Length: 70
Image 1: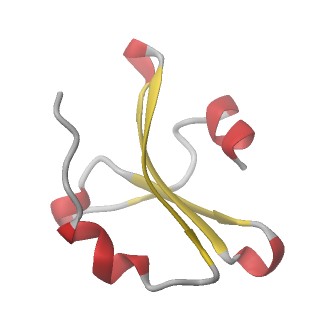
Image 2: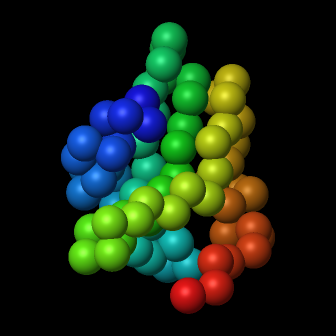
């Protein structure tokens, strides 16, 4: 799934609010893997904020996580 994100970094569900600019993708068996990321295509970077396994309710947890310094 990380390879798929690298190959197409603009693909995913766009989030809003405190997570504006971040994307989420689900994959794996039963779509139980969730990856929250933010692409910076111009800089050739992908910021990975969260990899959750087992169908966790990461939407409740993600806004409380620390932010990346620019």
